[in-house]
Image (cartoon, rainbow, N blue to C red):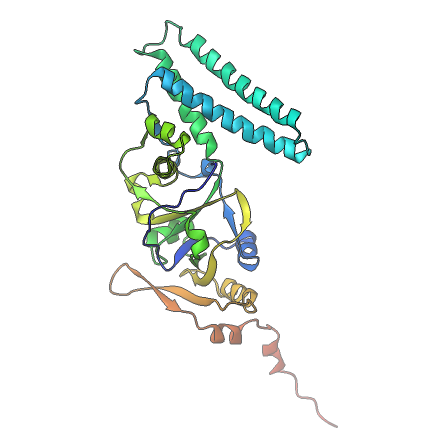
Length: 320
């Protein structure tokens, strides 16, 4: 994705939560204050971040969109490679420009050739093929990673699906203003389609079209996922320093005392104070409650020494 467009003012919650099982990676991310921005292709929903293109333009217009998309991507790839080997002279830039145009023309010529195949059972094979390639090329632009966050820390399904069946934890973050421009709220249901005309307008520099395309790719999911109440933070893929502010850690019902102790101790000397909570059942219904964790009691009991008990039963030794 070449740029990020500020969305209209949104009601961003005071806290957003990341459900995690407890493992070395979770502890690393807490201690080093990092987040893992996942490749969307690894998500459990294969339709996630995969909108379909509505070809509301003719084949020639789609060809022009495809040409621009390929040239922009090729330019970005070759410029990055040239920068890595410190080639930035006029000849290099001219070579890149020629190669970008050539690569786009080769793809387009190939599509035009295949569109003449009489076996295509569609009314306009060229329009069909250009639409398919525009859709693929558009999605290649979105090479960012995603951190999925939830609005609630007390969702039973989220604890079961993402919190290691309550043996894990839920990490609460506040959202600094500088991070809000990279945050998207998920919309559940509606159409998976994105108009080719919106893509064309985006390429012409229309900010509202850019926002429309961004949201179609990044923030639409099937209605069945609505229980997640998801927000998405978008950034470079992989482990990154967190742009969010760690505020609290919530432990699941089945989370062991040793895990709680390890995390409380690991974050004890952090410059900004962290609040700790635990999930408990509500006896009158199936809802969950978030309650403050008594860290004083926890640290008073742990760590323990098993042999201490035996010290009280040492054999009595006669002074004589």
